[in-house]
Image (cartoon, rainbow, N blue to C red; front, side, top):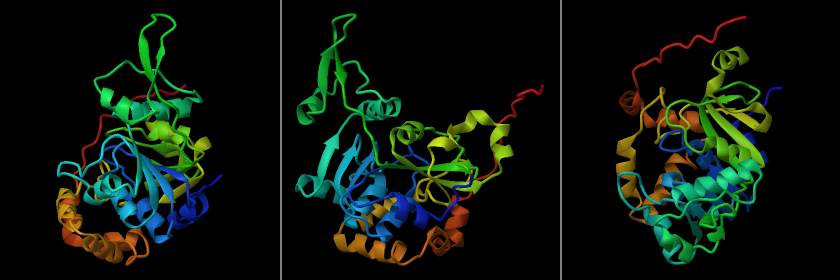
Length: 300
């Protein structure tokens, strides 16, 4: 059964005011286009969860979409602080919960597995225990050693960007694999955005790359270049210049609002956004093919 729809339709149906939203992806495959569509549709009071909020959540917070952020690292990668996010947190206008990376992923793993928690070994991050009451200690019944536990994270909707997907929602990822699988299995609803929509035969030809299975997916959206300014392995490079420029843009509220007016509200969808970036940017971010060695699955 096809689950194909536009990104606008998927956001309209599955993302509602007050929802806990998890936009997955580590370093690459960050679903910026979905964040922009959420902004365009004027969603409010969202709880935004993500291991690394990145620029995507700063834009959404600046647009007034969120009341709370759940994270394990907050910054403009390789550049510095996320200015607006930091200001909103420090002034108390934005609620927040901070975890270690392992703590954040453990919460997702517990949610994906239907467990009340997953134990973690003690770490050096003892300050987090003081700052976050969700950190608890229990004794391992086998060794009597104290371990750290955290509650499961159960998003209302996960948004996952992938290289390719079939119309039913079987989605494949290669390159850096982050928390996409855990986020998807932990969530009530899953929106998949994909660089390519392919036939079922393509997915079946290399099943080990299928990270997200169709039976947990609600919507499949064909959104080429969804991840810009992050990257999609094999399709386009990371736009490092954009991340540097964002540091300047985000120095003022006016700068961010001007960006949102031009690049989010001022375009109707990702295709128009990509064309607006222009041929020079397209060329700069283009990548050369580098094929993996084929695998022989055999035939009976």
